[in-house]
Image (cartoon, rainbow, N blue to C red; front, side, top):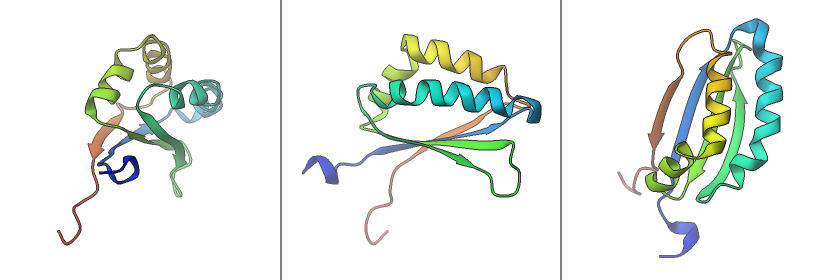
Length: 105
């Protein structure tokens, strides 16, 4: 199986920010995004904004597998970025991992 056809773990994290802290979050994300993309096993990272509630964002990332995501979550970078992000939230984050459904499923 080629690298491009391997199953990729997709991670989506929904962040409901304190509206007064959105600019702080955007600054933190922009300062961190390239370092996150350089983590082993990270193939892709995007930031999405809710179309109707502009203080809600989602991170959308692709990882080689759960082990790569877990390694990032144990990294010094995650230990720096996640606590800083949590301080900006109005409610707990919602995170989940998915994979593409098999063809014909």
